[in-house]
Amino acid sequence: MKTKTVFIVNPVSGIGRQKKIESLIKRNLDHDLFDYEVRYTERIHHGTELARQAVDEGFECVVAVGGDGSVNDVVQGIKGTDTRLGIIPCGSGNGLAHTLKLPLQPWLAIRALNHQYEQVIDSILITSVDEHERQQYVSVNAAGVGFDAYISRMMQAAKTRGITGYTNMMLRAYNTYQSGTYTLTLGDRTITRNAWIIALQNSSRIGYGVPVAPQARLDDGIIDISIVDKIPIDHLPITAPLALTNHLQLSQHVEMFRTSEVLIEGNDDKWVDIDGEGINLGRAVRFVNQPRSVRVYARDIHRPLIIRNPSELLSFPKP
Image (tube, rainbow, N blue to C red; front, side, top):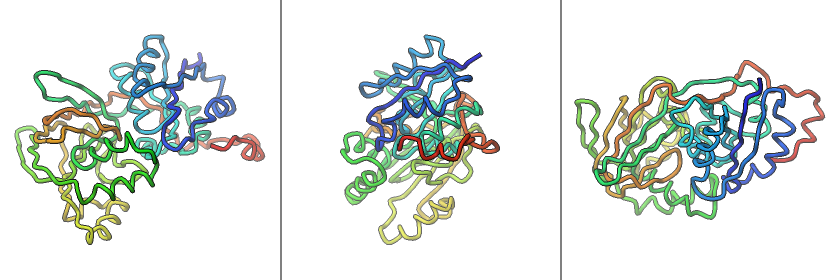
């Protein structure tokens, strides 16, 4: 029986690699395995509405075509169900796609779907601790408060996307954004720190495939927390290579913890980064690991992405 699937496409995501998605699906998806539709988002977080609608209509797989924000929108819509998540990475950072070893070329990512190689991964339930308006979101890759959340908020209105836009935004905000004082409650332990960033990882990588949490695994039932001081400019040549080689824990500016649940208080600017999207959740936010709560199609690295005819490579529409 074919898997009933819907592709939810963000037409303005990332750097525009999704623009020819329908022709790429037609040419690369195994139509003996999938019965599919393509639907397009029309406004911010419309992907969540479309994903919920797909679940109600009995779709077994919802594929996010876009960046980390598009993936998260779909996750919000399918959370708590057995509906599988698929990803065609067309965004800027594509953090979860990197962790799942998915190809970053859309046509190859579609072929990876044909493997129907399923992983069951954790997620992080994020709850605002506000007696007047309690909000809940789910993160599948990474979350955080501080400078990271501030940049995510600013990028939502940025005209230039991709690594260039992200880097320019960070450089402009670096000198003006100040560290804050946060109190973290981890079980029966409470710590207070002055921090520039508090990063919470479900996976080991953030956007652009940068490894920041050496011990993090998608299915280990643990949230990996990094508390980062504001790094002086003259220390960046030392700290950056540590991050890029997955040894960030060796930096004098980073303190790491592992826990299944944490309450963070003192988030004065009230913004939280959730898989690359800035959300206003208030000054106190609880993060709880939800073990094995999301079914996702990853890449089976032991199986080739078969090319039936070498000349076929030349005929694919360019992303």
